Structures are given as structure tokens and as C-alpha cells.
Image (cartoon, rainbow, N blue to C red; front, side):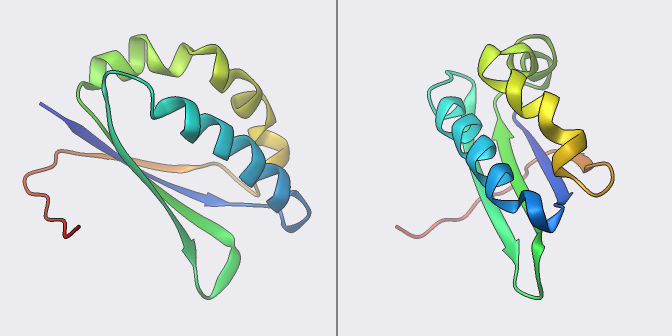
Length: 102
């Protein structure tokens, strides 16, 4: 069963460009993973330093055991304390319906 992660970020204003650069590298690499389904990055229209990432993966245990340990995530994880103004807000959801229009 697939799993969705909703992750909120409050980025330090002076770190916004670095945040985007590092996250872009992670998102580009994730796209090649067999267990990856989708990811959407949202920006808060009222606050340029607030972001929301919505990821869907095929298996939660694979995310915990394999994906979080990928080498392409190392620089990202190490930089988070410098990039963020507080901890990430992470919640886990079970998708029950997905609608898309191409």
C-alpha cells in the first residue's frame, strides 16, 4: 500500500536559494527510484520562506530502510539545521483516492 508524506518547511530567508538547490537535487534523484510515485513542492503565496512537500511512495518500510539512507540525501539532511527556522513538520497519510487531469 502506498504512503504519502506531507512535510512543511520554514526556511531561513538567507538560506532560501540553498534550500531550493539542495532539495532540487534530492527530488531529481528520487524520481529515478523504483518505489517512488510522485512529489509536489508547494510555496506559500503569503510567505516566501514557507514550503510544503507532498511525496507519495509505494512502501513506507522501504522509505525508512532504504530511501532515507540514499547517498544523494546526505548533504540535504546535514544542511537542514542551517536551512530551517525550526524542525520540519512531517505527517504520514494513506492515500485513498487520486485524481489528475493531464
